[in-house]
Every structure is written in structure tokens, then in C-alpha cells.
Length: 323
Image 1 (spheres, helix red, strand yellow):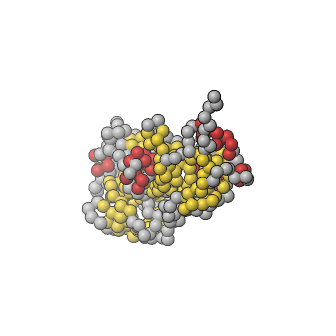
Image 2: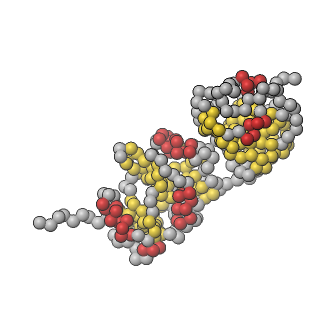
Image 3: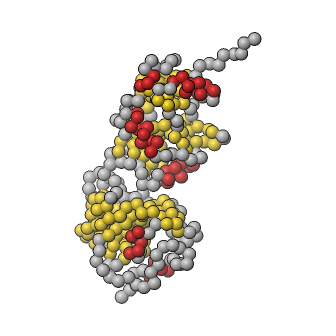
């Protein structure tokens, strides 16, 4: 009987990688376990592995499982992996095959509805992934994966920003608003899906931000500003998070979800926000040479286009010194 792990072993040196490298051929057995691993290798992708005849049949899926049956994702058939890989996660050294960080994204069991050389139809039962999927072969090793169930998430919202309306003075009901700096940068909505973002076409430095979010799908709202000579994305709103549209949620809920992402790096950060503190934020904006502050109603949904729920209050002009 052919050793199903021969190709797997030929690509790995057990003395150099922490991956399991069994010395003996696998024993055929029945089983229904699966694992999906998030793999930050040369390019981010997800590895789907299904237990089959004592090994894990494997596909590398660059954009992860499709959430919408209207969109199929590429699935590259790779070598069978040993059963020990069901729980493997760790750092594969750079220079080795598959070098990079691998973590377990989901695990569970599956049901087989069909399994042939050209088509694999399964039902996944996991903590993060669930539903019916079919993998179908398109050429030698390239397959596609299709979701057979209804969409698992809300569609992305229209990418049109909410705009503040200018006003000379802060609102009287100051406690009903949060106050943020008006940065004076270039407005940018950043959709992220499958660890990638279209915004990277014009801003390639945003690719690591998208990759850092892994399989999390988001739409960030912010501005590109220049700080210390480098372009930085300052994020101040979140329109979409992990499959759920937030545009109908109040500002406070969107702000909490944004802060939970913990966006903090050299090229991107979460803008500070101060509820009910108009005067000190205006003073700080003026001292830092910023154009003003934006007052945002705490209970306001996200309304594309100009909205009176967001008020741009310019910094007062500096008075010339006396004498």
C-alpha cells in the first residue's frame, strides 16, 4: 500500500521544523475530524484539513471559506498531512517549507455527502465554521470551494463616508456628544476581507493591517494623515465587523467595537475620543495646530453623506500678542 505521507515527509526536515513528521506510514482508519489553520506564511491563507483514511486531506484557501454562495474561493489541493496536524500550531522557521506562523482557527467534525477525485461535498460542524460546502476540481491541483447554504453574514455596506456639518460653536447639550480631533487628512474607508484590502492599491503600506486582522471582515473609517514624515491611517469609526453591518448601531456601539480591535501600530492607530469634553479637546486641537474638533452624537447611526449628527467645530483663530 502506498505511503500517503511520503510527499509530506519529503518536504520537511524533522530537525528543523516543529511540525509533526511521523516516521511510519499512516494506518487507514475512519474518522470525521477537521481543522482550519490560519497560516501567515509568504502570503496569508487558511488550510482546510479533513480526516480521510488515516490522514488529513488538505487544501490551502487564500481567502478563507466563502461566506456567500454567490462568490467561490480558490482552494489549492496540497499534500496529505498527518493526523497529528489536527492540533498543530506554532512557528515554522523561515526558509523551511511553509515558513511562518500557524494557528488553529477552527476545529470540529464534518459529514461527508460526496467524495471523489473531482468533488468533495461536506457539512462542517465547528465553533466558527459551519454549513455545507463543496470543493470541486478545476485543473491539476487547483480547486474551488463553494458555500451551499445561504449567506453567513451581512453584505458590506455602501462605501460612502458620513460627513460633518460645520458649526461655529459646540452644541449646548455637550454631554450628548463625543469629541474627536479634526485631523485635516484624506478621508479613507478601508474594507478588509480575507486578510486583504482594496485600499492597498493606492496605499500598499496597509497590506500588513489587513493581514493582521486575519479572517475578520471589517470596514474602517478614518483619515490618512502625515505624522513624523510618514502616512498613518487614523481610524475613528467602524461600519462593519466580522460579518455584521454596524451602520444602524449608535456611535457608542460602533466605537466600542472599534476599540476592541486594538488597532495600534506604526502606520495605523485608533483616534482618541472624549465624551462630553468639548472645551479641553478644542484647546488641545488648537495647541497642536489642528483645524478643529468633530462632535459626534452618542446615539447617532452611521449616515452616509452630510449629517447634523456630526458637527465640525473649527479651532478659534489665535489672537496676536499684545503690545
